Length: 295
View 1 (cartoon, rainbow, N blue to C red):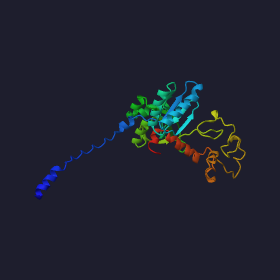
View 2 (tube, one colour):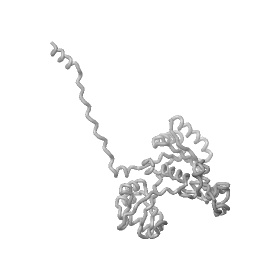
View 3 (cartoon, rainbow, N blue to C red):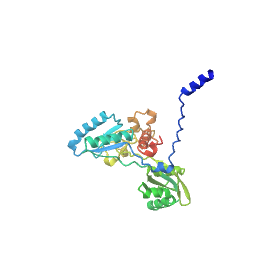
View 4 (cartoon, one colour):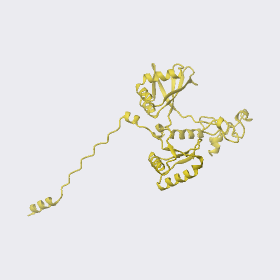
């Protein structure tokens, strides 16, 4: 009787077929990662005319609010265009679609991806820019292939090194994809019979008039000058204190940023300046290669 009951229970219990194990996700190859285009989450809006700006702004506000679009920053650039910065590309796609439907007269575009700048150290001689460009591409077919397809690879300048003046260094602008290839080579480029170390450069514009960042003296709009030595309101060249024995410098940028007194006792043009380092960190975030590495 007991065995009969066991048989009935087993027949009434539905059998479950185990689900097949999920196939492991394929890891993309290095070449696929390199070839994947990198986009910034920025959208630039151009109004049809200056008179339309106010209405365009209202439409933009409405779209952002109704679609819960997250905006990190919104400002007007030098051309008078509205720049919208979002945390992800998804928000930009939604915003762009809604604008094209609700306000088609607004022209929109995304800026080209900002490229890394690298420094190649210990060159054996002072090459001409075009000569070095050709030598590097010849030695690296993978980089040459990307350069020929339109990727950025440009030798900007070759100059004598400061610490070792028997050697030279080159400044080169490369695409994010090419920078990844160089990383895969141990951050080295091979030039003739030499293996040259590659370093990243983060040059931030600094004005010699107001000491502010992001522009040079020629386009400075500051009403008063700020001294790069003492931070007072006069030109750096005419600073009365810079040659005085025991003079203690004061960086105007660190003073404005409210760093403690020990952190702003340096010149505004000092490369170890905390404010300059903060600007460099912001610059890294605008370049996809570094932003993805969470520098």
